[in-house]
Image (tube, rainbow, N blue to C red; front, side, top):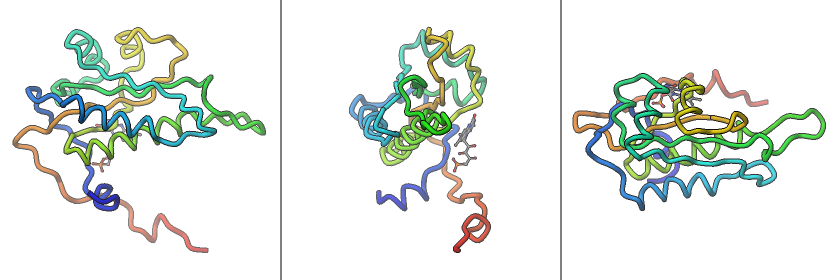
Length: 172
Ligand SMILES: Cc1cc2nc3c(=O)[nH]c(=O)nc-3n(C[C@H](O)[C@H](O)[C@H](O)COP(=O)(O)O)c2cc1C
């Protein structure tokens, strides 16, 4: 799919077939897109955690109580290190969230290109997730997404609810 079409067609998927897991190669192509993402000063302050073991999945699912989330065969957790991320000397601005957002978006768009459903989730319980994965307190738990194929009955909305161009763009 070309880039513009990919951006137009991507939708957050909230329907997963628990019986269909991802082939390793497909999963690796999605992760590769995150690995290749740009980051400030090329610090690459990320760690991507693929949760697929049933026992760990059970624990991770408790961080976000939605039936559709619990059906996904795999959850991708995007984490990072504030210490590794670039900081602006003049005011201390830290690029960690920006870097992780770009990696996340690269992976979500690649999932779309592979026909794999994804949904960026920020409203998870970080305490539960940190405990489920046994992550140190200083690991930045940025975002998670289920990865999986939509259920047979699922169909895309096909429309985007977005502000019009003239509301969000200014030419000066
Ligand atoms: C930073 C961010 C956080 C989000 N968190 C959640 C979430 O916790 N739960 C959820 O169901 N969707 C979440 N979404 C998905 C948005 O609701 C969705 O992207 C938006 O409504 C536009 O719909 P679309 O992705 O289908 O184009 C999040 C998206 C972003 C970018």
